[in-house]
Image (tube, rainbow, N blue to C red; front, side, top):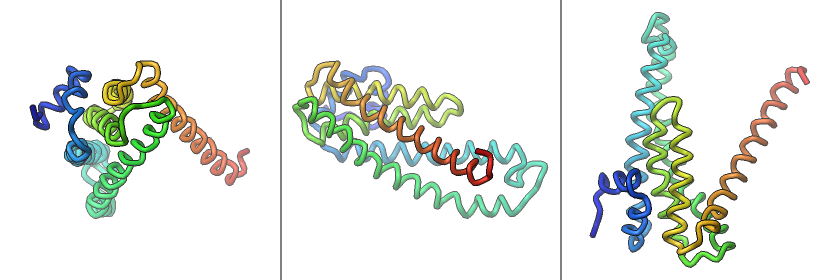
Length: 196
C-alpha cells in the first residue's frame, strides 16, 4: 500500500511505529520529496510569521517606524534566505543520515544508509511542522529525536537500547559542539571588547 503525503504526516504524528513499517520497502526519494515539500512550506510560513511579527514591532517599516530601507532589504533578501535555507536543510539531511548511519554500523545495524536516511529524514518532518509555532519549536526537535529512535529501531531491526545510542550519541555530540561554538564566539566578542 502506497501512502500519500498527508497520510504519511498523519501516521508520523499518530502511529510512528506503523509508519516506519509501512515505509520500510521505500527508497530514499519518497523521504527526500516529503522533506523538501514540508521544508519549503514551513520556511515560507515561518518567514511570513517573522515578517508580520517584525512588521508589527515597526522594525520593517510596516509599523510606527516606517523605515523603507528595512522593508526593501528584507524584501530583496527574503527569497535568497529561503532558497539558501532550503538547500542547507536538504544537504543536512544527507550529512546527518551519514553521521547517524556511522553509529548504526557501530551498533551492528542490519540495514543500509537508505534505512538510516528514511528514519532521520521522515523524523525531521514533524519537527519542521511543529517548529513553525513560536516558542514551542524545541518540542518538535525532541519529537523528531524520538521518531528517529523508532525509525532506526524498526528499519534496522535493532534493540531499543542500541537505537537510542545510535541516535542520542550524535545528538549529544552536536549539542556539545554548538555549546562549544557559542562559548568560543562569546569569548571572542567579549575578549575583543576588553571585557574578559
